[in-house]
Length: 110
Length: 116
Image 1 (cartoon, rainbow over the protein chains, first blue to last red):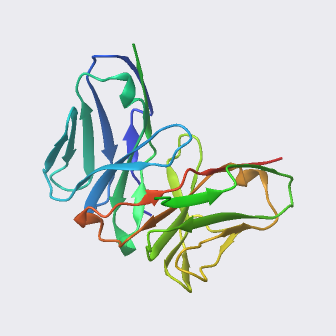
Image 2: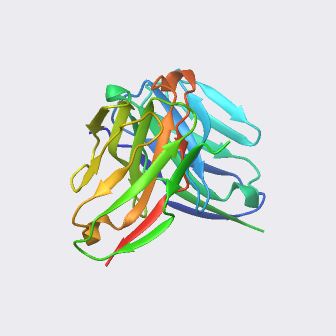
């Protein structure tokens, strides 16, 4: 079974602060996705990273795939209340199924 | 554009009762999935389907059954509900499983099930 551990599990910060969320595994993934889930809704795709070492930017969000394709990070610059939600990483591994991480719940306050 | 629609949104079941969670998608996706989400545990795959008439078990299939008679519908059946099945259930669909080509899993809004 491929496992993805995310850290931290919870994060409460003030508007304007920077933060980094980590997604780690002992397994190699062919690609990795990040989703954001808001209360009462299903997850929505933010980005897909494919190549080891790849960095993708989405406005104030920066995503990185580890060189060995076993880990990833999400960095948010100058967090805003609209960034509040549950962030999930998901790795594509065996049998082309997505394995989801344990999730990081982010709360950004004014 | 409805996407993935799940019903009901909320349900309370007594131990031993059974129910069917409905899921339908209007994107003509071949691939459909059922996940459960427990607090602090991310999403666990229960069952998935690669097309009409084909289903397979995921990580946590015990206590559940599925069918896929049409491309659009993928109902999840709970037989003999147990408190351990209290969770939020999400149905999802995708065009393919080529995740490295930025394929997206589209999710419904979820069904919050409580078994008492």
